Picture 1 (cartoon, helix red, strand yellow):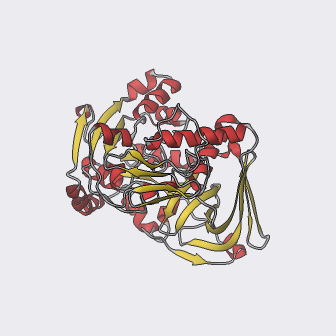
Picture 2 (tube, rainbow, N blue to C red):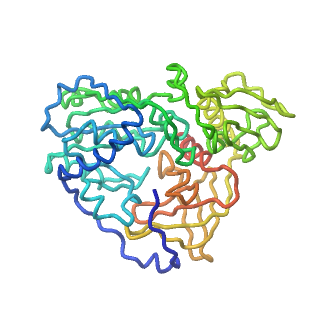
Picture 3 (tube, helix red, strand yellow):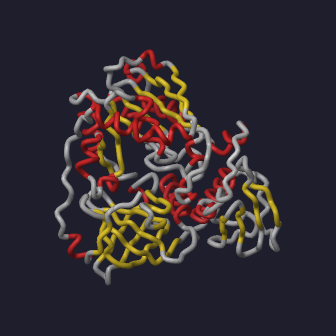
Length: 427
């Protein structure tokens, strides 16, 4: 999916009147029907099946909060299909409105900035549930999974459940990540997809439980490992491009420790520094083909044949850098901005740094200076091949967002997100 991109000087972008905050619209049944028709081909290709658990507890006219794990664009098609004709307002990233604000509002989308405290969004959710009598679909992870496991949930989610006080429904998908993982550059693979549609909590159960208990229930529901599921169910992914760009998440060699020299291509992952090679087999396991010329890492706690385990090792290495005062990312970037929904504006080049003090972005011939402290967010909006432009790190606030595209700096997007999460935990 592409978006509207325009080049405009930084000072002219800053002079643009900010986007308006609109109250949600209840989507007409037509829109749900249309999305269901559009989704029919994709779901047929995946032999989609839905397993309903306890859904008899929910009245067809009773508004509810729907929480769903987030793997790929197919998620929306699944949700609209299995919940039709229930009217649904969808929490959506604000940049999704660019160039199509009217359409997105009519479909029922509610905009928000990812990983930014957004009280307006909660107000809009209450309005949709109470005034429009519409259900609300939310991806609480706020972003696609990088490594096929759950991304952090906001600690405020339990409070949100109490505030909304409506039934909570859970949609958990199986196979959607394997079909279109974020790292693989929108290359779709042939794989069956299914989902569990589960009644999770009633309003009475929500009020009886503490915020901590609610958060723990949600944490348990959002604990999964798509690679492990693939292996346990012997699900084959035979496409010859399945390891393309795997270096986006496995950016650090587990043999020599070098970063930015990994390359995922075809079915292999190769370290350009020590020459080690792994093959990603049809069941999603990494098999060592060449040991490489160096073997400096002796980590026995991690299973480097398993992608999430390797990713977890990278997280531990980042945490170690932080605690030892060594963590630092410096990269030149192309800078885009979002201040309204008419376009994403290219404003020039700059430099982005990330340390234990947070992010600092300078650019546009000295006109732009932005700082974001560690405490600003529990995670980081970062993405691969964002709107088919490139790999991206986003910083900003409710008024403006800066989309930073690293220029020849290796694979730092995943590391920056890991570091933002670990710094938030520590500080």
